Amino acid sequence: MKHEIIWMIVGMGFVTYAPRMLPFVLFKEKELPSFLQGILKNVPYAILGALIFPGILLIQKDIWFGLLGAAVAFVMAFLGANVIIVVLGSILVLAAYSYLI
Image 1 (cartoon, rainbow, N blue to C red):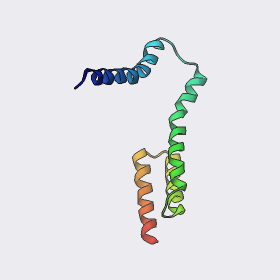
Image 2: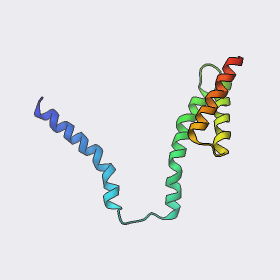
Image 3: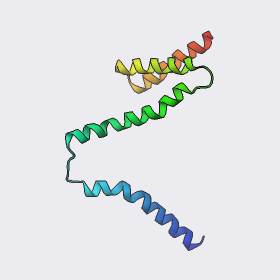
Image 4: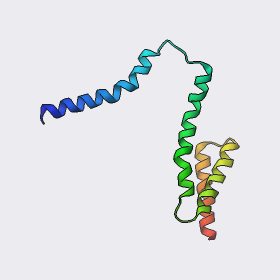
């Protein structure tokens, strides 16, 4: 293998690793304000919603299929069910719905 390719792989590894490691090193002793911590705690949920919501509406078989699955998952999650239970509950309801159609 050429040395340029090896150095390119090492450089890409550093460029990928550095932005992930720098916040840990630079902000090790500092604590974020509580307002900012509250915002950052909600980021994963907002991203998850942005990734899932279009799939609910753009399902090809039947739009009610997506809406029913989302409604069941939302209700179960709102009631405090575990993530696995939410997923399995949605799958069971959609299996029953597809069987009835």
